[in-house]
Length: 328
Image 1 (cartoon, one colour):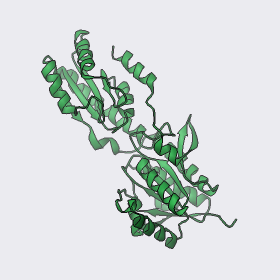
Image 2 (spheres, rainbow, N blue to C red; image 1 turned 45 degrees about the vertical axis):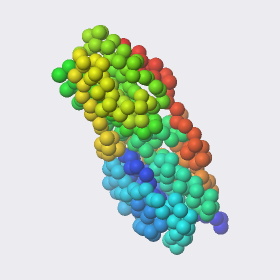
Image 3 (cartoon, helix red, strand yellow; image 1 turned 90 degrees about the vertical axis):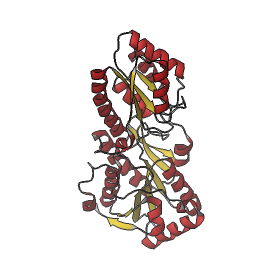
Image 4 (cartoon, rainbow, N blue to C red; image 1 turned 120 degrees about the vertical axis):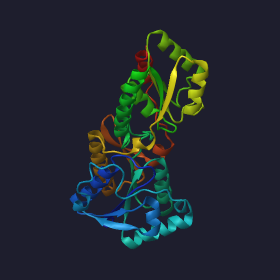
């Protein structure tokens, strides 16, 4: 076949997430399995513009399945947002003989890939890698499960202190515009209240809930807050508000921050990365382009990149109900 692909490039872009290395490994080894060359692109789209390429074979991805972060590094590229930058990137890919791209990242990564394909008809397949789990077309993004386990572990430790000192802890978790981490980790860690951007709980209801907890005999409480929560106050302002209105509580704040993005990926994320990497390469070999590979009903499925970018990953309303019942 004249349109047979002989060389595939792989890059990671945007925020890193546990499982990215496992996905790189899967892409490289699937290429080797199908007798295709694979080239790693360092530092995402910026590396494409600068021609920062390295040939990758099965042995070059030994012992990375268990590592967090990304061996190919990640960078945001302002230059790639310009037509001149993308032209340079395209010329470098042609020079290197790369005929298709697997891009691992979030909606920004996919937007760049889609634009690049539109301009140059260059085959692109996306693998969703972000701890926020905010990509449409997959029940799980790479790194989400690991981040949940990290958050649970942290909250369990914080609870020990909360109980010992009869304190109320506000624990802020990552999530930007999505409350998946807060909601799931909140339920898993037994939080008394969970604040997420998809639901506007309101300050009055929060105070009411905390008063009820106190009255029911709870001497300590954990409130999990997604960083993009709709109450509209940052976690320290929230602490001041509760201090002023519920002086009987001794309030502390813990912002978990970037520790949620690091660490060794969970078994779930390693298996998911392996499955998505195989599907990404084999989709390219089948002549497909402009799709994201994702998990739907535990089956690996394709979603058009445009839908993955524009669609909204919905919060599970049943989980909200479970959360309310569990905080009784």
